[in-house]
Image (cartoon, rainbow, N blue to C red; front, side, top):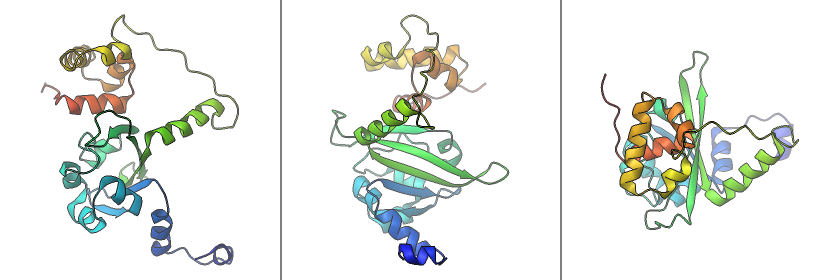
Length: 214
């Protein structure tokens, strides 16, 4: 498949798409609504430390529980919950310093009735993706300088600095109090804590917090 054949109107086959995705430096994972992994590119296999055939055989729910090079257990197991995320940062299992972080981005493809048809997980080195985000934030979608959003009103001592400086136990208690005060409305709780929703979801998973039954 080359540029000349594309211009001539030749159809792009699934094999062509696989070759294209395998050429990317970023990881690509495609997940079906029933949590089957329908495709994983070579970069994703290398970053996660898993063979392609094994990943396809395991499916998404079981892959999350495997001891991989990256700890992806904080990502939701179900496609419906996964579609609610925007991004999530994780690190290598052997590296607790966070110096080699990876950011996952979630891109769902939905049908006309809003049901997910396919979920794409795209991930790469955090520093590289942050640099890309920084350019987008400075220029905006149109290429013009973007306006900064006004800071949300926050109760004193409940923002992101308080979360980062607290011990694990204090962080857990702060998250519990905030989630209870907002009726487990993750969007409201994230605004109070000055965290992104995906970071809050990761903290909830990290501390094993469970919403109490009504």
